[in-house]
Image 1 (cartoon, helix red, strand yellow):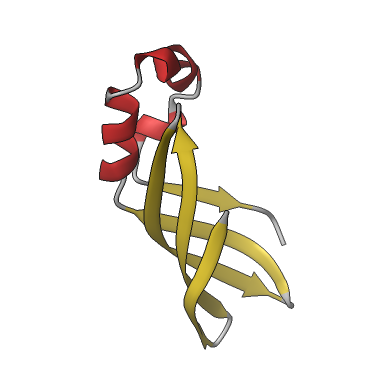
Image 2 (tube, rainbow, N blue to C red):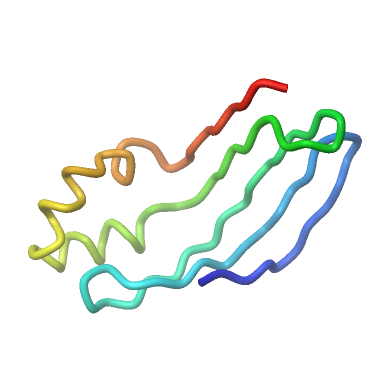
Length: 88
């Protein structure tokens, strides 16, 4: 789950600070993230999320049963942000 902590708008850019909660294996993980969403004509055309993956990576390291799944979804360990771009 997640909870919006704060948000702001500047022109066609929206910033959203979130707390994300979940589990890795059976270990609870809480992370804070800041997403930047670019709008064009009222539609989201780009989203960039920034977060510190330390808590998630520590939980993964302590849960060997999830290692195969994590390796299949390499995006979790490649970069601490994710960019999604859609054409307008």
